[in-house]
Image (cartoon, rainbow over all chains, first blue to last red; front, side):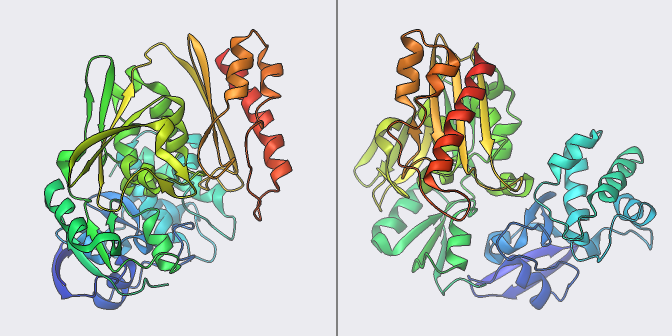
Length: 153
Length: 272
């Protein structure tokens, strides 16, 4: 099936099988491998991207469902060489250890702050419940998101 | 994990969806948000030959005031329920339970109609709608019919929906002054409930249980005990009566029965 998807501002057209998952589409057809496949069962959140501005788990969405949508991946956050405030806060506050969950954590945090610009620490912990960090580095991740909330993009 | 091959068709109206279902019969499955169906297809526990995508039927996404009840479009996403002021004012328990489904990412995609039609006894919303005495509006080739929530959930992942029917709307009575509590016990924050208990007090008290049998259940023995004047603690002792709790790697039936009594008591003490 022919689909048109805008990924990080660039228009893409591909002919895909209906069963191709959005995460596969992004990694294998568009060639953006920043989005990670973790559990592949919509539990861990490593594959989180924004579809029309909202966080979704791209392992549990078909590429054909994104036809006509705007998708933002971790590669699309920085502007003119400047990290997105959430990315900068993750670096500043060391919100990562092995880094595997990071792209998904950052995308989930961007969506969370869009919906809840002034979150409490508890709001952040609840808001990131769909993202697992198996290094268990949650403390610094939460600190990074709190810091990013204080510096609105 | 990749689903088995299937044919995909996107319905641009409820009529188009019904036509596709009539054409393909039980070879076809409706795809709404996909939060339950796609994981099953990836595990190849479900292998529909045709997916009929109704996810873009925005005219079936709404929360409307209809006098003594609210009308909720079947394709209204959990996120839309979570932020609906109308739902919060007139049916607070449903908004609170919608906010407990999965996680933000799941709530951005998943729909109330999808959850109801899937009929998973471990899901939050079917039990809540059972407690609230909701009515489901169903369209099929022969027209429209309504089904009471008490008659809708018939077995494990089995509902009153026929293969050629589409759930279009959920009608839920207003309970503006109700007190309520949803107690959800799980191991990881975004998981399904190992057991869940919802109590809604609006004059009388109604109690529903999540994951205590093949379908969502009303804890009738608890409700009857409360109506007869029992204290919350005494009434909660009846929480496991009439249930058939499943066994899985998370819990034995006995542990689930214990959880039901504890969670019902907590919910009743909050709503009392």
